[in-house]
Image 1 (cartoon, one colour):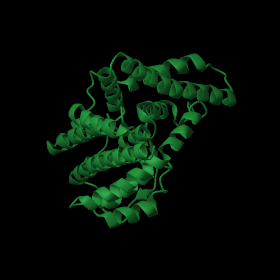
Image 2 (spheres, rainbow, N blue to C red; image 1 turned 60 degrees about the horizontal axis):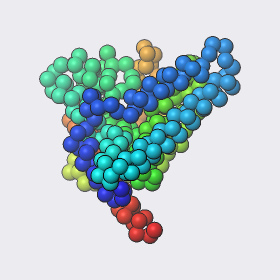
Image 3 (cartoon, rainbow, N blue to C red; image 1 turned 135 degrees about the vertical axis):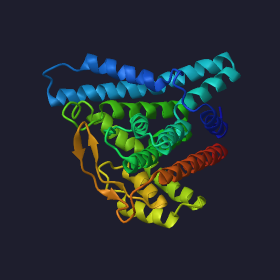
Image 4 (cartoon, rainbow, N blue to C red; image 1 turned 60 degrees about the vertical axis):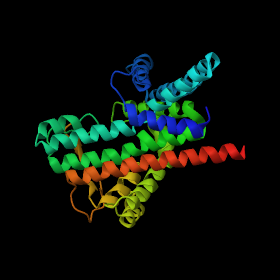
Length: 321
């Protein structure tokens, strides 16, 4: 299917269907494969070097198999019929994008805050963040929502869209494998430091360009929003984008901080241990629920801009070819 038609179809499918829990999402299969692969490859007493090599083997196997299996399934469907092939390609592409589900999950957290149900808000925010949430107040929950929106706009929307534009649905699915590996084993703790290092570094590389495209998209989206501040967004991004411990997460987060004029970062609690981090947009105030609503609107525009740019790029590349 031509990508200039595929991308709008994937966008519409995501906006209509979101990410229903009943659907057999490929990421769940990837998660099961990672768990199984780790149990087979890891053994007590392995050296750090051996752990790294086995983790790299798991990473290579999952990413490559995700690419080639997706390509095989799509080709097999097209051999049956063009309609079936198009439906399969659109469906698999849809599973790579999380724009609608990100908006829904974030809105559900804010709805609980609106109802003054702080416990429910904590439970709902725990579904989309890795930090401890049992002690968060309304301000910290709002900050968590905004940071998640900014970061997930990159790895849940712009990054898979970028790879779908460049290499089709198979490459987007390979990216989802990279992202899933990083979320499961790419931790810098004692247990995964060596085994997950290859996954973590590959995720950093895969997100390098998309993270900066997302930050740029946030600046542009804030210019299109009556409540955004594109000048502050650009300034904060260029100044604070590299302050985050992650080479990529700080890019869209700092742009979002400036766009809506709130302070992000500053550290979080993980597993009962406080992990300090620099502030992004330190001159701004603490975020509130209304700021998180602004962030939802900006991320929706970022997604639309991203798909529009992808369609244009796909059409131009086809014309050149």
